[in-house]
Amino acid sequence: MKPSLRKKLDSLVKRLEELNRLLSAENAARDMDEFRKLSREHAELSRVVGLHEQYQQAERDAADAAGMAADPAMKAFAEDEIKTAQAKMHKLEGEVQAALLPRDPNDERNLFLEVRAGTGGDESGLFAGDLFRMYTRYAERQRWQVELISESPSELGGYKEVIVRVVGAGAYSRLKFESGGHRVQRVPETETQGRIHTSACTVAVFPEADAVGEVVLNPAELRIDTFRASGAGGQHVNKTDSAIRVTHLPTGIVVECQDSRSQHKNRERALSVLAARIKDKQEKELAAKTASTRKSLIGSGDRSERVRTYNFPQGRVTDHRINLTLYKIERIMDGELDDIVNALAAEHQAEQLAQLAGT
Image (cartoon, rainbow, N blue to C red; front, side, top):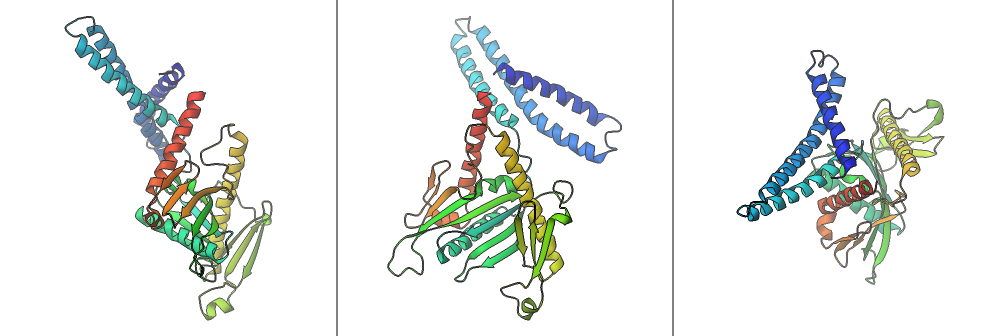
């Protein structure tokens, strides 16, 4: 284990001892917010320190076995014990390093997911509908809630654009790598000569901002327009200006919401999406300023970047960022995304570990 890693672990052991004193103090429960904050930190550090203690025990086991190796009668046994201890140390060192990786503070947040049709005309709109169903089915499998924020149906089915809010534990951590360009290769239903067409959609995933404190929306910087909602809804849709369009003047970000018949509810939802988009924009700008020269696994975050191809004739889905190809497109389109999501998370962790090793 590197001296720098040992030094960091020693400091965490001292911090855990300090937390034990703070949490056991008589007035520890008086400030519940502070108590919860210290308790979360204690739980995180306890896991890391526990792994460190297991590593130290394995070191002692290896040292004890090395002491026995001098006895010819114990040499074979001692060598086996040393190998076992060293293998355990290697495994635990990797687990310690992974536990020390910086956590994304947004991982436990709810999220907003946007799917937009791109190049490919009507087929792109149909593919946007397929992607929307894929993510909805995945959310159902995770027992998350999906709330429709805004939709703009395309003429032949599917969507020109659809925005949803996904509510669930760890939702953002699971879907945050989905942003980017998604390409489909298949024979459209409208194709009479059986030719394969290529179409594309863009997906954007960003964490929900806290209701208070994170993003302050200055009313003077907002232009709010009302208009009549389109789509199903009967006479009410035609007679009531319930749809809302909010423009954030400093950034030019525009959000429309017309799903609810209530103008007040549409306004509230539009402002929540706007706050999340502004937060996402701010974090991406900060990340761009502080990013290392090594290319990140998840790419630049540019929505035009192609991240995945869905090839229906060959039954395969390829994620280009990690060169992963799976031949089970029907199951993936039905929301079985765990293989892709887990692979992306694992590669991201490997990239972080490689950066840690290089420091």
